[in-house]
Length: 414
Image (cartoon, rainbow, N blue to C red; front, side, top):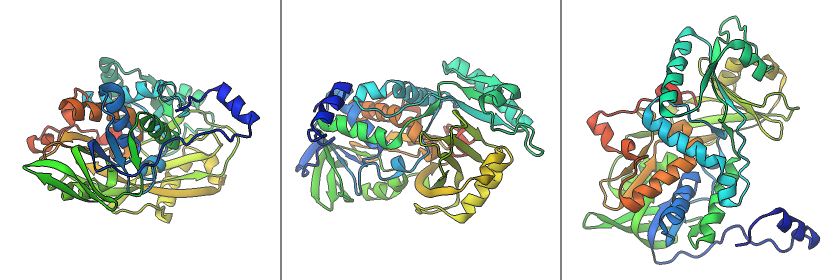
């Protein structure tokens, strides 16, 4: 694989860009692999990458029923942060955030990581107390966050209205190294690196069944034939329950749609990410000038991947008081993704009742920000049978009542 560099760009410019090679190969599936990962989204590709990079396991296939990164990885709003309350959550999200810092260099692919800063607005006195508690927890966890007053919020976000009649801004939880990255580029960068290690990325290959023998997985039935596997990783987000059913076990998750929209492009006006949990919305500005806007999940279970008028009304009605200028913008496009939610709003990274079968799911609305940390932990779990980052996120916690309650930190969308 040729390395990308300024010299490569100059060289290809001189020969009309005829020398670029494919970013990743599209091989026919082999009869068997050491590891098969179901799901070629960010989490699945990151798992494969860290299996190769950290443990030298490269006889790996990543199979995807659609196209690479065509699920939630291509349908999110790109927010990255690690200011969670509970220790296990803060650990894995901070690992992910720190990996994002150097991901472009590690993958030799520009993922457009932008540590622009993230604000979580406090618009009630209850939120003020909650965020001050989070600051103290993050300090103990080694996660850099701080509490800032309304004047500082206005300085960072000039377009904000901090004196709203119903929900004035009383301050904010601020993570200066939070930010955004390009969602497609994250998937493409991991895919390119996996392909360079000799791994097979197999698209348009839907899993239709899971085979086992003696309590251990032996492979998967697919629309392109049977593929044997010594170990199987299920990383399919909103369809985790269906694939788990094929493997013979049930998951404590439910699937709901999470919607978002972007406005027409405008001049730069906001260079931080702002979340407003009280009014249930969040917003940032993309590199193309679009205002990226989202809110909470739908209130009912569904597998819809498109937007609705109800979501536009609810989310924008909530944000217009805090950001009056958006009332004059036109909507450019709208979409939805299917997220898998657990009861405690924390993920599952775990062994399963089927031997040598592992599951990574339940990220709900916070999946994109966790991709590098999730892949790191899942790869370690699959390679070694245990991972400190994943230890608290096992399936057994639901049976034991050992919940990791992040409903406040994760319940609004991000």
